[in-house]
Image (tube, rainbow, N blue to C red; front, side, top):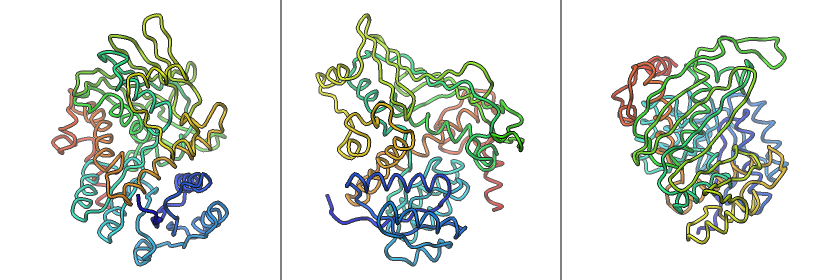
Length: 407
């Protein structure tokens, strides 16, 4: 492994940009940071300067600040960029950077549509630059353990995976633009995570029957003083079938006061598995008939099968030996640890000339699975993921693509 540090610029210094900085800081604090934050870019210099000051406190060096991508691309210290901007800009920033000889890590969704995502993949192939998708949920210890359980064959032949989030309220989720179709609705923004987990656990999704809806026609700020009228779906429902013939039932409905239910479970011929929520301190629980396995006993059972548990040294350094952050760990610390693992994987991929764990196609596939749900709703029929990936079906996305062309 190369000992040199990769010069990385964070592009976008808002909510997610600062979270990514904390990911770099977690690696630095643990003594395993193989890169250096050499620059920050944001159209608002005041915002960028504030994050630069924080970077100095956390990393010991103040990165250069830019408000223009053209100007930053003249900086030879910038070897790679970490895109954490509004998803409408992902493809234009990524393509310009790759054509300027820079590697790209891009926050999910990789792009706002399949068409613009394919433009990014084409640029990566043309330039030879590394393109990675920042997909963090799979990095947590519980999901690594669950994947190992599946690979071990402990559950037997898998029949079903359930991925469900139901229950919420009428408050604006994270930010206003995440409720608008032309900037990427919350239904897409969150479902990307779960599409990635589904394919991480049970392989490529082939067929989808589903739809999206706007469950909350008006959403309010937390204090209730301001409201918005969403134009993008905040809820998605689907039945899926994977290439291996496994059925997946998917629900994302962050709406409606009352009972809130979240479930990630897998069911096979020998038993079932319940996986805790992401960035939580819950345990993976495997039920094999009357036998219940969890914690150290489950890890030992996995080891007996010779299955690799993908909790590497960097994960242990930032999230502890089990990759969860430990019981009662603050959410922010666990979140920064998840981000640290994805950032480290990207840096190592560049330095060692290998593909990132979630590359450009991985990010595009997750987006295609989500759009297959929405395209199915428009078409009123079952849709294949390949139809979406190849652009054969695109009706739902047309309006978004047209808005991007006008920008």
